[in-house]
Length: 229
Image (tube, rainbow, N blue to C red):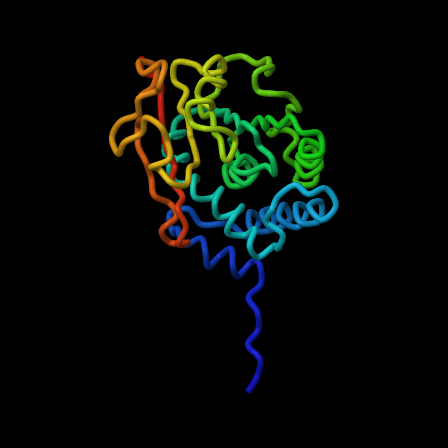
């Protein structure tokens, strides 16, 4: 019996991304896979992530980041050169994959760990993203920047309450927050239709909660919040 060929990383990416309204161009596929290859190479030396294989990283990193794409596109519609702040960026997820598929998006990656920030600078240069993506090696508490972000995003950075508290000074009147979460019942103050910040309940309004992990059989939700103007 002939041996069945193992799926390539591109096969896994395309099989996992079934969104006809947001197709991945061949160029975007190439850039996403280059990002993955660079991450795998650096991870073998610098221990950037617990995800050790490239095939696992397709789901855990690429598809996880791309799950934000449809709703993010809708929220950015009509904005000129919108800005996204990725806090505690780590391996560059979700910021770098989103910059790849959204060519008008400008991204700031905040990462205080030196080896991770070095990887982010390297991979942005390899991908030709330096004109739109900048890396800030700093604690977000010390980030000096104007309040002009359309989106402030976080994955595996801090509890929701802390994430909002730390980034409130960087927000503007129209800023929206994207919090990538696993189990919702572990988030203090959150219900299906309401979020009550433990100390500043008047600041934030829950816009929506999206279940984006069902097709991958994982618990993954996108929590969207905005200012209570």
